[in-house]
Structures are given as C-alpha cells and as structure tokens.
Length: 270
Image (cartoon, rainbow, N blue to C red; front, side, top):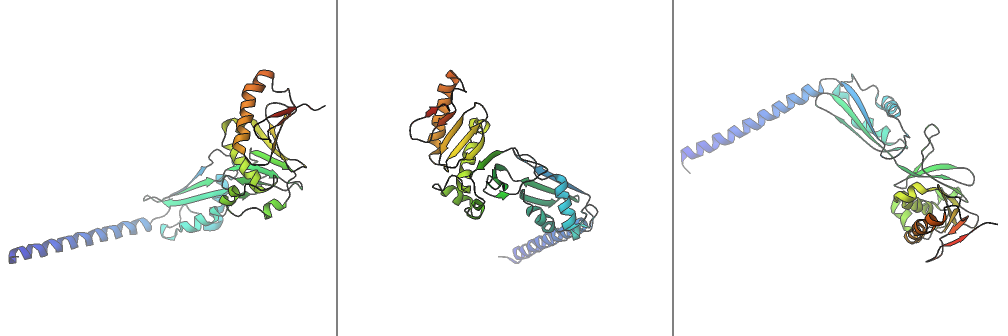
C-alpha cells in the first residue's frame, strides 16, 4: 500500500469516527430535549374483546393516580412506566397493560381486559367468574358479565382443589362433574361453538353429580352426564335438533338424554 493510499485510508476512518460521534451528540441532545420536557397528555385505551365491561377507563385512571401520581404535566425524566403498569396489571380484570411515551411527550396506556367465559355459583352461593385462560375472577357487582352460568351441586372446595394451570385444567378429563376442570372444559367447548353458545344458557350439576344443560329455546333439559366425549355428544344433539325437533316441535320432550354412546333418549315427565 502506497503512502497516499494509507493516508486516504486514515482520513476515511477519521471521517467515519467524526460522523458517529456527531450522531451520538445529536441523539444525546434529542434525548435531553425530550426528557427535559413535561408530559402533555395521558390517553387510556381499553380493549374489551367480546366481553362486557368489568373494569372502566376511570378505574384505570384511578389506579395510575394512586400509584404514580398525576401524569399530565409531570417531567418526562421523572416518568416511570413500570410504576404505571404495575398496579394496572395487578387489577383482577386486567389481562395485560402496556405503557409507552411518544416523542412529542404524550403517554399512552393500552389495557386488555380478561374475557370471562363462565360464572360459577356454588351450592353455598359463593360466586365467581373464570376466564378463557382458567383465571378465577371476583364478581363485579356494578358490572355483571352476561356469560354462561354453572350452578347446582358444586362445592366451594372446587376452587381449593382446582388445577393450578390452564393446561392441567384441560388435561383433567376424568374429573367429577362439579369440579372446576369439568365446568371450565365444558364452558370453553360451548363458547367455541356459535350455535350452542347462543342456545345453552346454563350448566346445572344435579344431585347424582351429572351435568344438565338448560337451553334458551325449548322447555326441555339436556342430560349431558360427565364432561367427556363432548364432540360426540354435541354432534348428536345438533343432529337431533336439526332433523328431529325442527320437524316435530321443540317442546315435545321434557328430557333429552345424550349421555349414552350413539343414541339420544327422549322422555316426557308425567
């Protein structure tokens, strides 16, 4: 390499060093300008999905105020997003929360509410929700959720003896009818089916520890048995509705028994 080429190479490296240093200085000034300002505004966005409102924007605003103080007007360098997110995520009905700050000094809080799929009322009248991830939620007396209801011979111990994870709730396929696992798996199956989601309004556990389903249309009770072989049971029930009750009428029977394999047994009460 000639002396001229070597000099050119050194100048090129020096130029890149100067450019990187300058960019760092400019970035530092930009961050200083940004952090030396104050928060202009706070925007809270609620994502309720398909669920009824259980936690309001005002509730979230109150949590932020008590945990981090008033946000608008606060110096940006004092802002701690974790201090804002923490109390929100601990709220029973909140599934997730994300806080971010824009370059122009606005703070945005995005909140995702949990989605209850079932309300359980035990025989001692203890009541709670369970969401689609198997999380137990307290009842909100101000905002009742319109979801499937399970009641009857359900012990308060179903909470204490409940599986500890979402996967174990689904894995426990031989659990008793009144267990949290059985009720949860059945509620998920119903909620995932458009027809039965609109047709089934209540799950009832009778004194024989069998599941009964109460429909919206028709005066009958569906004797389901245990929360097992659900695909087969709902398939034959749908076929019976479509090819049977649609022709003879929906109020012809008092009990539709689908708990046995490959058959539907109907009866009238005397």
